Structure formats: structure tokens, C-alpha cells
Length: 403
Image 1 (tube, rainbow, N blue to C red):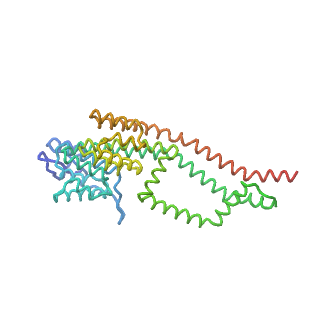
Image 2 (tube, rainbow, N blue to C red):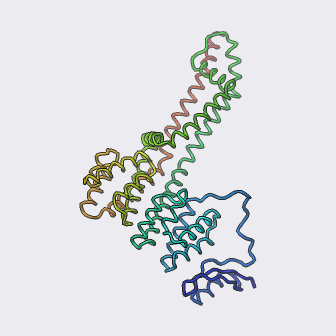
Image 3 (tube, rainbow, N blue to C red):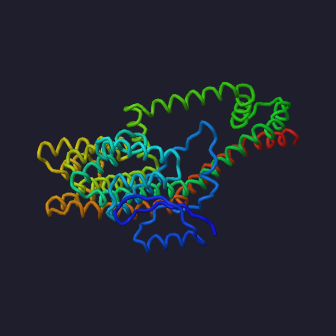
């Protein structure tokens, strides 16, 4: 009969580890539950281990790791398990070695006497500022499990939205890359044969043909310069977009893009209201809530307008008035926030706005491909027309000369 090692919580809430012989893991779980134990982990005692990892490599912590950690922690806390025992159990449960190491460090920090939020704050590259401050609010209000549930919901929504947008973009990206590859192939292998023939005509070539010849010459003779310029431009753009002014300007441009700008604005409004509701319901002061949301909303333009709104609140203008003055927030958002302020149901209104924009984002993502297709079709038509004119106009001139 195979042996299974297990880790479980005994009726006193302590973690115990031992080995049991049973036909399968389910039988071990049944045996433990009959004794009043809460199983945490069950595995074969003679298992193959946790997998192979190349020396010097460490997997990055992903959003899914944070979501799983948050959900599992919520479940254990609601079962009445002490926080340190929860973290000890989750250290063993984590599949990602990097996440396992971070949870272990958090355990040690809390054991040394600091709070959970302070321990999380030591890992700013893993846990966002919003996550840390929401946990801090939950600790102060004694509702850590409720706060963790809302955080997990928010993280899952962000992950699913990004996944849907990425999936919707897959088709347009494939089409655009295919067009670029096809044009470059024509320029490198087909066009040269026509160029030799056209240059032997001894007549003035039409403008599209001259442009095509110039493009071919640039690609064949100066490709290394073009490649260098594109590389330098890409690196420069990357550094520029990380500066405060560059990030603001680039986010502003993205909001003005056709098709995508509207989608990004709706996504920003959904994220703004959902984060605002989560933090405000957690009990954080309104000014601190807006300050955190402004830094973590994901768009610098929207973030700066939220910061301006917080200045208006300091003057006693409320929330809706400064948001209306910014001209960025849609009238529906401003009106519903104003109603929420007046009726004392701001959290409920924020959740309703978030659900509305969730629906809008879902609809926009589903129709993204159909909205991009006309743009791709027009671009493809222009390219085909240009190549046709560049190649066939000289051939028509040849037929006229022959006649």
C-alpha cells in the first residue's frame, strides 16, 4: 500500500506533518477529516519532487500567483487559522519557487513583530501599492478576509480584461506582420527583376516606380543604417516613456488613438471606479484612497486628473465637482458619483459604474476585430494599389512605345 505524507491543521489549530498508508490520497483526506484534522497538503511520500529548475534561474511572480495566494489566504483566515499558520501552509503550497520564497520572507518578518502590510511593503515589485494599502486598511478595520476577497476579485478582473484584449489583438497583429513580410519579400526578390527591365527602357519612369526603386535601394544598400536607427529609436522611446513627462505624453496619445483610445478610456474608468470602491469600502480616508488610485489606475493622464480632484476635495468641493471640471471623466461617471455623495451610497454607485464599464469593455473587446478589419483592408488596398501602379505603369508605357 502506498504511503502519503501530509500536512494538516489539528483541532487545536496547529500544523502537524506525518505519513499515512492508504490506497489513494482521497482516503488520506477522509481519514484526517474523520479525526477532526483540516488537510492542507497531501502527496506521495516517495514522489519525484517538485520538478527540475535550471541553475541560476528563478521564475518570476505572476499575477496568477498573487491571485491564488490571496484566495487561499482568505479561505484559511475564514476557517479561523492564525495568520502565521496560514503563511506557513501557503509556503508549502506555492508552486512557483519565487512566490514560495517571498511568502517565507513575509512569514519571518511577521514573526519578528511587524504587521502583514509592512511585510508586504518590503516586496514592492510583487505587491502593488494599492494591494498593500488595502491590506493595511483591512488590518486596521479587522476585516482582512473581506478585503482579501475584494482584492482577489479586482486582480482577476484585470487579468481577464488584459487576456481578452490580447486575444482580440492576435488576429490583427498576425495580419499586419504577414503584410509586412509579404511586402519585404516582394521588395527583395520580385521587384529587382522588374527594376532591371525598367532601367533598360531609357525613358523617364513614373513617380510610383521611382519611389519603389528608391525603397529597394534603401533596403539593400542601407539596411544596417535602417536597423541601427530603428534599434536606437526603440531604446530611446523605451527610456522616454518611463519618464514622468514621457509616460504622460504617451498615455495621452494612446487615449486619442482611433478604436483603441475609446477602449482604453472605458477600461480606465472601470479600473478607477473598481479600485476606488475597493479602497473606500475598506475604510481608508478619501484623500488617501484617491492618492493611491491616482498612482495605480494604469494611465498617467487619468491619474493626474484624479490628483487634481483630490485637491478640490481638500477645498471642500466634494468629489463630483472637481471630476466634472477636468472634462476627462464621462458625464455618467460624474452624475452617479454626485448621486452617491448626496445619498450616502457612494460605494454602491461606484460598483454600478464599474459593472457598466465592465460590460462596455467586454462589448468593445468582442467587436475589436470587426472594428480593426476596415482599417487593415484600407491599408492593404493602398499597398496593393501602390505596387500595382509602380510595376504596371512602366509596362503600359512600354506597350505605347512598341506601338
